[in-house]
Amino acid sequence: MLSSEEMLWKYVEGELTPVQASEIEELESQDEAIRRRLADIRAIRDELLAGAPTPPDGFPERMAVLAERLPKAPVIHLDEARRFLRKALVAASILAALGLTYLAFEVAPDWLEPPPMQASPLLGD
Amino acid sequence: MARPSQALPDEQQIVARLRDGDPEALRLVVEQYQQRIFALIYGIVRDRHEVEDVAQEVFLKVFTRIHAFDGRSRFYTWLYRVAANAAKDHVKHRSRRPSVPLSEEAPISDGNAGPRAQAVSLERRRAVREAIAALPTRYREVLTLRELEGFSYAEIAEILKLSIGTVESRIHRARARLRQRLEHHA
Image (tube, rainbow over all chains, first blue to last red; front, side, top):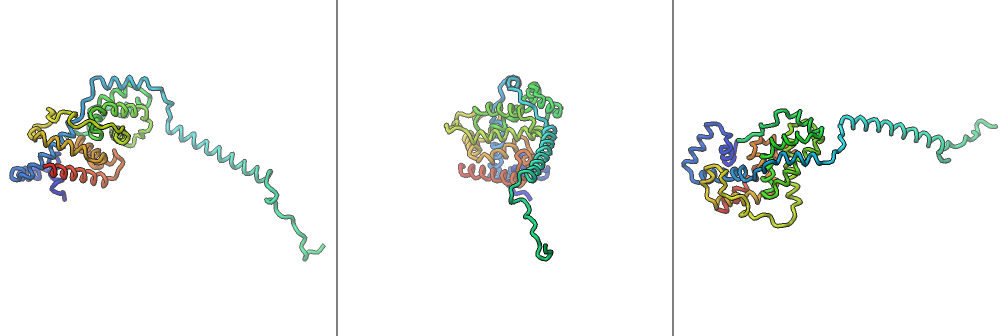
C-alpha cells in the first residue's frame, strides 16, 4: 500500500495507472494543500533535471586526446593472472615441503632425536 | 521519464576496445553519456563550477580502470557507479573554501524548467534549490538517480551496491526532509 506522499511522487513521475492518476487529478483540482505539494514535487524534479550544466563543445574529443596522452599501463588479463598465481602457489608449496624435509632430516636439533634404547631388566644381559 | 535505455548500441565491442586502450572508444562513450554523467555529478556535488573536472576524472577512470569492469552487469551500471563514487569522494575531500553561493549558481528562472515549474514563484524555487543542497550526500545521490534516469530501486541498489531496502528508505527520508524543509519555509 503506497502512502499518499508516495502516490504524489509516482503521479509526477508518471508511474500511476490511469485510474490512480485521475484520482490524483481530481484531488489536485479540489485541495489546495495537494496542489501546493504537487507544485513542490514538480519544482524539485525540475531542479534536479534542469539545473546541471551542459557539457562544453568538443568535450568527447578532448577526453579522447587526454586518454591518448596517458602512459600505457600494462594490460593484466584476469584469467592469465589467476593461472600464474595458481602455478606460483604450487611451486611455493613444493619448495616449502622440500625445505621442511631437509630441515627435519639434516639439521634437526639433538632434542628431536629419539631417545637411546635402554636395556630392559626383564631381558637381562 | 528519461530511461537509461540509450545504452551503447555495441556495448561489448566498445568495452573490448576500451580494454585495448583505444581512445576513440572513450570518445564514443563520452558522447553517449556526457549529459547524464554531468547531471548525476551535479546532483551530488551541487556546484556547477566543479562538475566538468569531476566528469573528466570519471571518464579517465573509465578508460584506465576498464579492467575492473567484470562484465557481469551492464556497462552503464558500472559507469554510473564510477561517477557516483567520484562525485561523493569530491564532496568528501572538497577543500574548505566556501562553496559557491546559491545566488551565483544557474539562474533560477532557467528556461529549461517545465512550464508548471515556471508557474512556481522564484522564491519557492530558490527554497527548493536550498532544500536539495541541504540534503546529506547519501540522500541526494539516490534521489538524483531516481529522478534523473527513472531508475528503479533495484537498479539504484545495483549501481550503488546497496540493498533495495536501504535505497527505499533513503529515498523516503530524502523526500520527507525536502517536504519538512519546504513546509517550514512556507
